Image 1 (cartoon, rainbow, N blue to C red):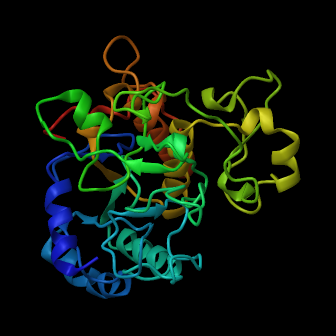
Image 2 (tube, one colour):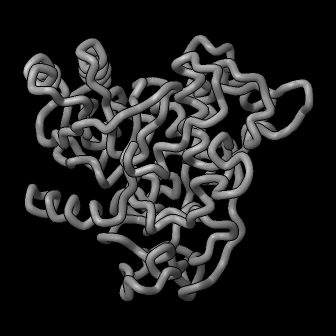
Image 3 (cartoon, rainbow, N blue to C red):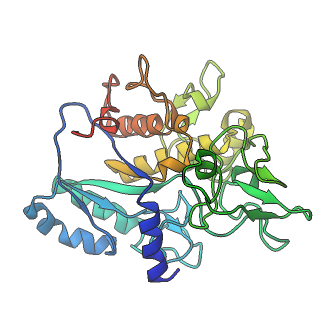
Length: 337
């Protein structure tokens, strides 16, 4: 992607976002956030003393996850579990550096008392279409299949993108057609735009999405034998030392099967745990049904860990060791905070 088109994509996406500042126990205050794009993680780390002296409280940084190429600014997300540690898309590092560089930068920021907020892509993937032809794998995006997206099915059984949104006043189009020619994820149940004609529906598919990566999972089946989706298992944490193995995943496939929504929540929880980020800018919220984000209104909404925002807050608390679960989501709804 050229620099010009990358900048155009940023301008296009920034109009439909939400900054989700994860709230820690205790009072919070207004803060000075610096949007700091274009530099590498190492360059930002070197600037940290200067940024702290200038009085910045936090940094808003670009997506840290692997995109289509090392030249991409990150909005054409390829793999949410790749922070610059996997050799894919012709590079190990992202445009901004390696996973090691990223974690060192975050640690440096926290040492200077500066919070780190990342752009977080949960609405779409990149420009490639899974199963576009006989030479394109249906699982070209790790852990995903065509039925996870809004796609047109051709007579030959291949897949194509739908149009980009034609009418921005039409909620259905905004949520079920394309954005900037990126491949659109189907968050709703059932998939509201998958099939031979626009508006065709298709059941959500569930399967074990990362059978060879037990480090991407953080629960094991609990005594109740209920679904992982409700967080009813035993929390063992992410990482290579969590005791989960590839064989264990296969033996307990019933527990680890997910639809795309559960996969997205698990991916963002993994990122929050690994990076220890302080919050996220969500891209792009108006293209996703509101119920995907969690419980809205009513008793217990603020303390609910349902949905995408609830999952992020739950992992923030678990990773940081917070035990006060009463109300950590107020920063989502209070613009003074």
